Length: 243
Ligand SMILES: NC(=O)c1ccc[n+]([C@@H]2O[C@H](COP(=O)([O-])OP(=O)(O)OC[C@H]3O[C@@H](n4cnc5c(N)ncnc54)[C@H](OP(=O)(O)O)[C@@H]3O)[C@@H](O)[C@H]2O)c1
Image (cartoon, rainbow, N blue to C red; front, side, top):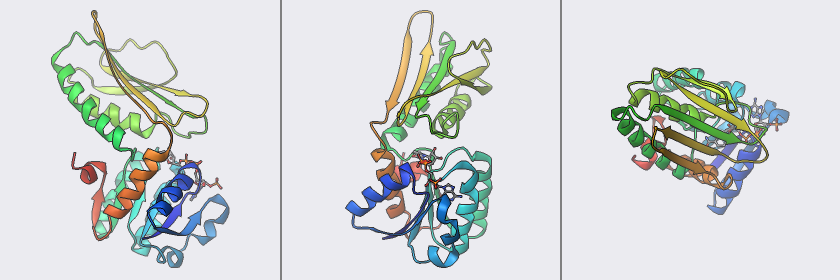
């Protein structure tokens, strides 16, 4: 498979390593310094684009891939509202768009466990202190993380006493029982830690996922690029993993 890497930072480089070990070739690498090379002609040299750039660039980059008629696998987080527009445009133009806030298989198992836990907690109001905590490296541009936003949306959907979620930088007082606090921490070189915490008068229940590095995200993105070949439409990790 010939791959165009749109965004060649920490993730782009990790994806390239995985792609090369699977005998794929990288035909285009885009950073902020060579944006003029992100043309329809250059994109059409690739079978698939993998887009891990930054929140304000993702929409335009995905549109360019649709223009070139090549499938795009996108991991950039923090552009949720425009991502919904991109999904709509993908369907209208009969293009291929695979979007995931987290490509790690472990995190997607964690999403499924969290959904189960939320459904159970909805039946047990004694778990009256529920929260999400996420920790990432200091260069991360968005907070809360895309993964935490997915967890939060799903918990609000499944726990009837929660109406919304609220984002905080670090630990802060939160006394509104109808909203779910999401605490974000930025420190060191942490690849990604997510916790969902349930507390009652009697006990704590915690689900936790900790990435050991970026390889899990990179393997998932390359697997998605392989899987999406020959498909049309909008996909995510639930489709790939049949969760
Ligand atoms: N879905 C997942 O599983 C997952 C996992 C990890 C991270 N992420 C997300 O992936 C994104 C990238 O993360 P990262 O850690 O690789 O960030 P990073 O190290 O900052 O890399 C970003 C790359 O994008 C380039 N870039 C900047 N503007 C661009 C534009 N307009 N078009 C194309 N490329 C552009 C940067 O170029 P310069 O270096 O020249 O500025 C750099 O090469 C973030 O949104 C992050 O949250 C997702």
